[in-house]
Length: 171
Image 1 (cartoon, rainbow, N blue to C red):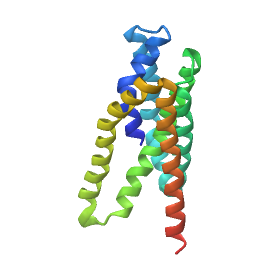
Image 2: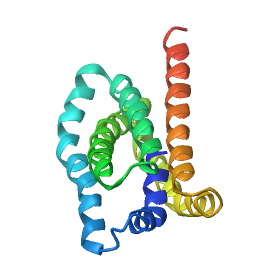
Image 3: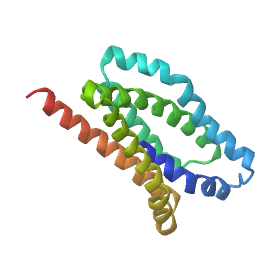
């Protein structure tokens, strides 16, 4: 779902920032950098954290917090959006290395390549569907609903994943 959110951002984020009077491409670039810099800088450390704790705790916490902040994007003013974008980048960094680690752990050596391929396939589908779904929801219901819907899907899947893992672990 995090890649679905990225796809959603491709279409609606420039429109959203423009609607608040920040039509300058350099301003849009700064907002995207507020997401991308923490995302890039913290992945090594969150990967180390996932190696210590296992992938589930950071993946769950990162997904829940990412989903909450994603819900806030479409209701944030320009000043608040700075902080929301930084938080989104940080929590995306908390999720991404554990997701890759989990994919690796759930596959054996013989299927690891196809497991990673499946992981990337799911992500690429998110990139592809995000603009379609985000554009449709935005056109009919606005920025806030589009972001909130994507955030709520992230939260629901995180909770659902936690319930499945919990049940699977205690069999």
